[in-house]
Structure formats: C-alpha cells, structure tokens
Length: 180
Image 1 (cartoon, helix red, strand yellow):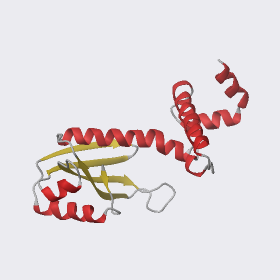
Image 2 (cartoon, one colour):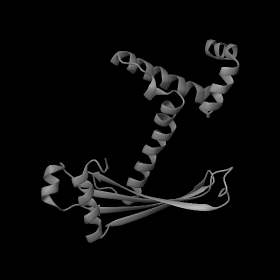
Image 3 (spheres, rainbow, N blue to C red):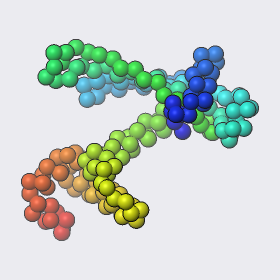
C-alpha cells in the first residue's frame, strides 16, 4: 500500500526510519523509452517496531522507491534541446516479505494498469467528469467504458485517441465494426 503525505505520522516515521536503518535489499531498474531515461532505485527495509506493527496489522516491510527521469525540454520552447532531471520518492508498506525485485515488479505492474486503464478512462472517456450521480448508472457506465476500451484495443488500434479520431470521422465504420 502506498503511504502518502496525508498519512503524516506514518509518512514522517518512514522518512526518519530510512535515515537511521539499513535497507535489507535493493533493486534497480533502468528504462529508456519515449525520449526519456527513467531510473528506479527500490529499497526494502525490515520493520521491527512492535508498536507500529500493532497499529498496522502484520506490517513487515517498508519499501522506498526513488525515481529519477532525465528528458529533453518540451518542443516549441527555448529549452527544447536542454535535458532536465526530475526526482521523486514514494513510500509503501507491506504485510508480506518479498524481495526488492518482486516488490519492483508488483509496483511497476500496478502502474501499467493505472496508465493503460484508469488514466485512459479518465482522460479519453472523461470518466471523472461524467456527471453521473446514480450509483448503478456509474457502475454501468464504468463497465461500458471498460468494454469499449478493450474492444478498441483488440480490434482497432492500441491508441485509444487514434481509434476515437477514426470513428469520430467515420461513424458508419464504427457501426459496421460493432455489427461484425
């Protein structure tokens, strides 16, 4: 589970803990894609504080993810060719004891789902701004969006934006595709 700043006591505890304790294992990932170099440094810490474990049932590990991204500036700006680096640190807790590599794979896998599904539904289908108030209608719309997303990816194009443009320009093709 990710620990965010709104969980201030636990967040601050982890910040202090990692300064005074040694990681039991580390794992690094380097990726180069989409014009950027991304580096993840995953550190796993064993939790031995019984008081904290009583509050957070079966808490065994703190996971610290340091991420740095090196990329060029945005196109059409004065700094388009300059490279800049961003850094972020996030914290997670776990009630299971896995290797740093396994934690890294799980966290990356979760972000894959977030990026390929939730983000697309929020941005392309505007799911967060649909104005639906009825709970059943919201569930039905989310289901319809998920079916649409899967259909478009499997049958048209992995790029949802491209598929939306294609069908926006040719509604007849959309109906023919659905009917077959």
